[in-house]
Amino acid sequence: NKRIYWGYLVSAILLAVPVFLLQVKKQQQSVSVSGFFSFLMPKKIYLSKSARNDYALLVINKLIKAALFPMVILTMAPIAIWVTSLMENLFGKIEYLQLSAASVMIVFTLALFIFDDFTRFYLHYILHRIPLLWEFHKVHHSARVLTPFTIYRSHPVESYLYACRMALTQGFVVGLCYYFLGPTLKMIDIVGANIFVFAFNVMGSNLRHSHIWLSWGDKIEHWFISPAQHQIHHSDDPKLCHSNFGSALSVWDRIAGCFTLASQVKEL
Image 1 (cartoon, helix red, strand yellow):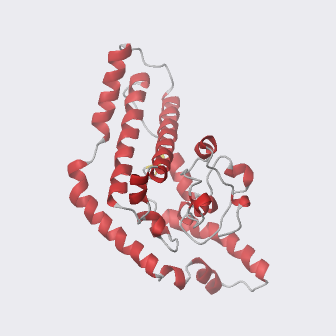
Image 2 (image 1 turned 45 degrees about the horizontal axis):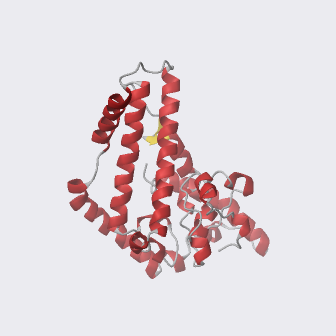
């Protein structure tokens, strides 16, 4: 479930290869391994002051979370129990839907992914739209360069809000699915991650915060946010940085009217 995981980093490197080859072809340069790694991790970015701040914030935020979050964080289980109890009080107990074990897994896994992606989008959206919350979120947008570690450049209050969001979302979905599908809930996962989250991370999640411009093309970007679209979100242009709030799915941005295709913007 963690973005900085060796498997996801390897997939990001592999996805960067065709971007590098295309750039070399445009510039009529020769292809070399050293040239690729200079393209992948330029010193001016990874040794910059902004990047060094990201590395420091990674450590500082982990210490803050370990020291404070256990005392104040919401947890999923009580929320799930409350949701199931509320449903029973409102509508009474019902017979569980007669679905196969495989169908239950698919429904539960998909519901977790969709609800999580929507609430992640909505929290991100209001972090930009509500002035008080923007004061916390602008820490993330203060990065002058983007690296995979920029994901950890966040104010502790924002981190707390996202942690509470996760507990509320998972608790709601588990409680709802328990009420309709029964207690035998199991997620389809790969190495412990929701299969859809795993797919999202494999498909270049670490390139979202990077200098490597990878677009999926207009048709796919109408449904899924590409790394290039998230880089647009980090633009200095106020019109662009208040668009593309989505994490994996771009449908929420299209519904909210804050959607920008990579093809509509020159490479940043």
